[in-house]
Image (cartoon, rainbow, N blue to C red; front, side, top):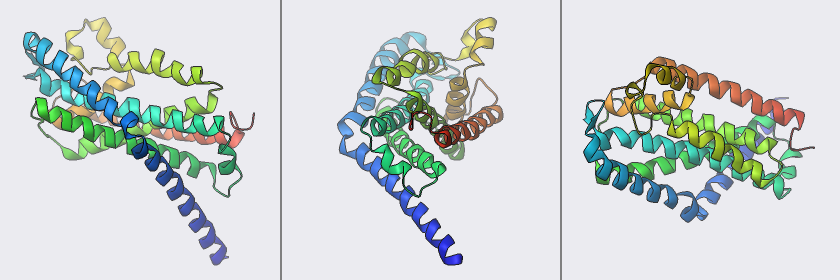
Length: 263
């Protein structure tokens, strides 16, 4: 019995490691598509918004605008890349029919979901590091609390990796893969306090903005650098934790039901 349990644990560990290695290899193999675009985009944002427009804006939240902008741009890159990595990878597996190899393997669905989410985490972290390096060319990044920075990145990346996984499960064609990022994720990100403090908005707009989870994620991350936030940081982490647990449970449930994979 112990030998059987050990064998099962070994199989699961090897399976999880294999999925993670495959995802990592995919990311670094096509680095020109996965890492470079975020660096170029961040550079353009810093040049146009940070330097040119930022001179007219002045301080934001008591900090130089470029220093205020940097955490938002880093988090925006983490969000979009974590989401994009998982949705493209898992839908590609469905489209190429090699998802069936995973489905017939002795791996439980929660291992499969975890493997893909880890892939999203890896790309989110790598891109975050690249954009951070770009930011250092334009501004000095204060570090208020390293633990908060790391926790915010990991939880946010996990949330949007799971969102990308769920999108890929339901998607039946490439249009449905691109619809959510274009019409849902991008607007929420731009209105999520990446470029501005919500304190500049009218009260009714501030109230609406508080319903945007990305606002809480960006501000929790910014608090780790600057020590300032438009939201309650403890509440922000609570929202992220609840989202991770809820989305993970939903993703595993969809896999158990065979939604999108056995239709």
